[in-house]
Length: 441
Image 1: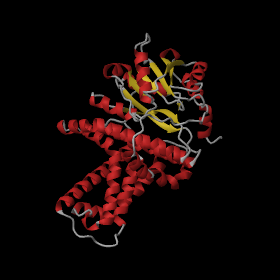
Image 2: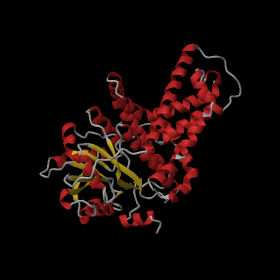
Image 3: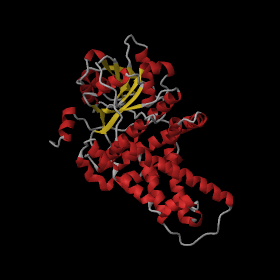
Image 4: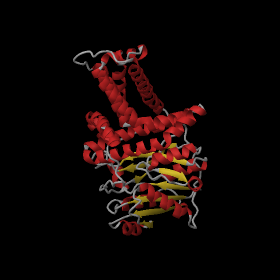
């Protein structure tokens, strides 16, 4: 589950227990009706956010392993990533998959450092892109996909990694099984490369662990479309030829997820295809990064939420309704904050519906909060994740609830015209990662 859902649940519980200095006069009935609608939307969405994770305690059987036969183009968009790129290229070259069945492409996108030279020296094929007007990962991927598809080499799927990543040696074998089964959009599991570097990277990592198992895997288990995560994703080259990439918002991954879904292709989750992503070390850096994500989510919601809602209602499709809920998440947090303030200012009009009032007075929200904050422990145990990061568990609620102000800021602030780069500095070999996970360093 994402942080904004946790924060909204926290806000709901606070609204139940805060008492105002005095009771205000009753509100006119149209406003009371509006508040009732807001409350029901909030409660139903809250139940959705706590029901989905229940499906994360089991796993659907993945496709059976098959002999390697899918051809992959590994695509690495890189903007000024010379400091961290080489370990990823070396990691990809060492994967347990026939060399003849995959090639590595680095997109040196508007670079001002030695990214292209590092990529060539590491043995990758380099695509240099310079476009000062259209900047960002989505534009870089669109350029690379079109260029590779127009070339003489034929591939079954694109696999995308961020330049700061490391990759499990079995990644392509897992993806090969999904592609051979006919899946066209697949998201692998994203883990944190550096979950013990700081309290931010630790709590960020815990949030990712929870999302992996109790959101993305859970949705896949139920049969809903999962969501692309920007890295560790595998996309059919034929699908890109058919519908184009064209995803250039700040959250190009979510944008393409919804575009493909409306064209009839769900995103499936491959829990055993693992890549490791560098998490930022400071709160300021995480704030900047997450604000960009919130703004991108709002953009995608404006583009696709109406279409998925219409399809969901017209076709009575749970899948499209759930996709609509997925895009509603940042607005849900804002709704929770508004209701929290209303519960403080005008308690006489808050949760007046008998069913909602019973929920409000039963301790239901507090129980849900306790359950939600225990999910990182469950994820760490089930997926055998670094226990050392759990030392930062007391700070996990701080990180999650920071989604409240940053979401408001992101949705109400002036949108930047261009994507902003997140600097990566944590260069390590895959062997170093394995040693860290084993507690030898």
